[in-house]
Each structure stands twice: as C-alpha cells, then as structure tokens.
Length: 277
Image (tube, rainbow, N blue to C red; front, side, top):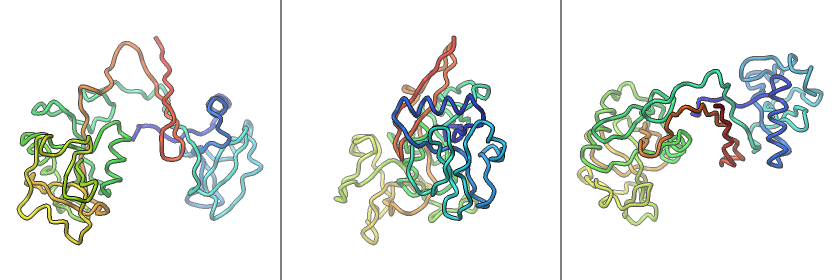
C-alpha cells in the first residue's frame, strides 16, 4: 500500500542503513524481507535473492530449517529465524530510482482518481475486507474510508460502484460497500469516522427499513448500489472505497522526497524524510 517492500540487508550499504535506524531508535531485532514461506528449507529475500548470496556480509549461522519459524529478523548484523506471528518493528524500503511523480491526488498510486464533482479523490478496493480492515487499509494509504457528505458524493460513490458489477465481486454482500460511518456506542447514533453525526456531515438517507441492527450485530456503515445507507455487521467482508481530501495531500515540488516508514508492531513509530536538492 506504500508502494514499497519490506527492507532486507541485501548488501553492505543496506545492512548498515538498517543497523543505523535500529540503533537510533533502540531496536534490538528488526523484521527483514527474508523468508521461507513456501518451503522451510529454501530461504530467500522478497526480491528472490537466495540466502546463501548474502553470507559475505551477514552472519547466517543462526538460520535453520523450521516449519514454524519461516520469517527472519536482523540483530547486530546477524539473521535469526523467528515465527511469523511474532511482533517486531520493521522498515519499508523504496529505491529512489522507482519514485514516480505524484498525481493530482498527492500519491503515485494511479488508482486514486480525482472527481471534480466533489474535488476529492477516490479508490475502489475490489478485495473484500471487514469494516475495520477497510479502515486500516485506507489509513495505510494516507486516505480514509469514504465519507458521504452530500447527495452529490453519494452519486460519486455509486457511479464508482457501478463500474464493478456484482457478478465480478467476491464478497459477503456483492451489492453492499463499506463506508466511513459507525454506531460506535451501539445506541443507533451514527457518526462518521471523523466524529460528526451523519446528519451534520451532510448525508443521512437510509434505505427503507434501515438501520435495523439485524441479529444485534450491525454497527458498521455501508451503502447499497442505489446510494442509500445500510447498517452492516462489522465482520462482513465487503468492497470499499478510500477517499483522499485534496486539501491535505502531499504536493509535489522541486525537492525529491523519499519517505522511509518504520513501524513497531501495528503502529507507526516515525517517518524519516531525506531530501535532495
């Protein structure tokens, strides 16, 4: 989602860079993009470089075959295999020779398209996700789960949805799309994910009979193909749209910027920005 990959110490320079970041932030063990996902006996980087090709600059003596430890961390210049379910910080890496010019949406993700009716950018996600997973996906893309602020914006979302017929969608409900509203306190008071009551946000047009809280588990927001609102079980996996407010997106200027984002467990620790004039 960041158009990057999990960093690996593929050469001495990358190894030193990872070590420098680890030391600066007091990190002992750092996930790297070396794994044995498909066979516990075959280790390689995400890029496909065999582990044996890295032993000139890395200590790989602690790497051993295990059906349960098929991911790797780097510690003090050594690789150690660990269980992939364990939590460690990690670094996302993007080579500066693949940086592309930002679009009008402030991203190099061309799936985000500006709609002049609202002045915002939207991206349809065909891979069905639960409401929380959809929220997290949009956040990772520096966007947010789409919020409907007007009847015009409802039309924008339904127009996008109409480009993806139900027979092409693999989801729990192919005619339902998750959006950024929620009944957080389970009291039938609906808010956008930005904290506004949906009436104040500008759109509160429910489908007939909704919200009905079927089975007493429908606390997350969605819309039907006609643009009318629906309450949905939060664990149901549906398609969704991420939205970017162009007032707050990154603007391209004469300085090239490379962002390296380091995360600890599931939250970001920091963004380190290097600039070249």
